[in-house]
Amino acid sequence: MSDEPTAGPPGPTPKKRRRRPRGKPQGPAPLGPDPLARTLAELDRLATALAREAGVERAPDTELVIPLTIWLGPPRDPAARAAAFTAQLRERVQEAVRGVAAFREGHVYCFYTDQPESPYSRPPNDSAVFAGYSANGKPEWIGFANLCLRRHEERVDRLYGDSPEVLAVVQLHDELEAGLLPGFGRDSRAYRLLGQVAFGFVPKDLRTRQSSRIALTLQVVATTQSTSAQRLRLNVLGLSPEAIAEAAAESDASSAAEAFRMVLRGTRERIDALGRRMALANKRGETLAVDALVRQLLGRLRGDVLRVFKLRDYRTRHAEERHQSGERPTSLAITDALAATDGRFYRDDRKDTVVVAGPKHRIHVFSREGRLVTSLELLPAELERRVERGRWRPLERLASEVFKDSLRKARSHE
Image (tube, rainbow, N blue to C red; front, side):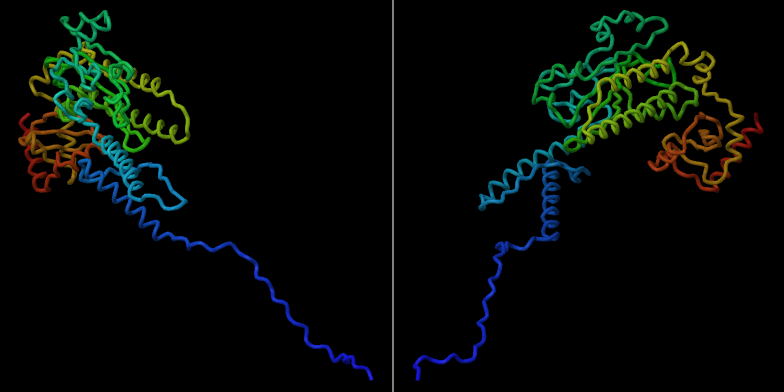
């Protein structure tokens, strides 16, 4: 008998362990939108606080583009990184605030004091026009006649003739900013003077050519409110917007005052269009011949204003005499006023007059006794603007009827 063991029935096959695939080590879960939104909100609040620190109660509605460095390695000094970012953000906020506040109607920006208004930012007298900047950014002024002599204008003697002629000088930014040094306005992104037209001499009171005469400067100014977004504006030196509007309101539709107001309005529209064109070109990364476009715009402005103030056609002798006497043709004005419905009568408390909105954009201004002061054409938007600003207040229905009665009595005594 053999001692070798006999083979028994086969046992169960042992199961092999499956090797789990090695995956990448799992990192921290993503933060998600909420923490990121809170971070951006905190940055917005920081920028607003820096704007208040720069001297504005309400931060400008603008968007700042600031490079943000993100570190993926081991932690670095967070305090130093925060200080560097805050300093960069403070610089950009100050630029944006300066760009918003840099423009003041009737002033040029003074880089010497780094203020939009200063003792040097307005013409020192009625004959002065802006002549450029000194090396340290102080605005400089020159008499218009001296400017003409400096540029060898052959017709300068016509400024003082029996029938004085209005002359005009076009200047671009390279001439006006030639003296500026870097750090004193030459490299400013907040305020840049693109060009101007200087006129001499025009009537100070636009309603009559017998007024004293002054120099006038019309400028195209660019202000930057963020990293690259620019806004273009028209700046008028020598005449206030209130004086221009008042002269136009008290003159008829064919007057030089109204024509000048319309020239300024059309110029502002063309400047806005140029600003939009510049913004679109900047967005597309295209190059735009800004100097040539500004020169073209200023050339048109020069021609338009000279046509308005061409003194031989400024006012006929009869019109001048009528202006001095205060007389106006009243038939059409009274007809319009008597036909006007409720809501078309206004009161001008400053002038103590009644304003009637007639058909076809006609506006008639009467004294309270019913004497016609002036008539002019005014677009609906202009009328609404004066009402919104409180310059003209709606007249109550009873007061309108009383005024109509005074008009009827005035007509019956003609």
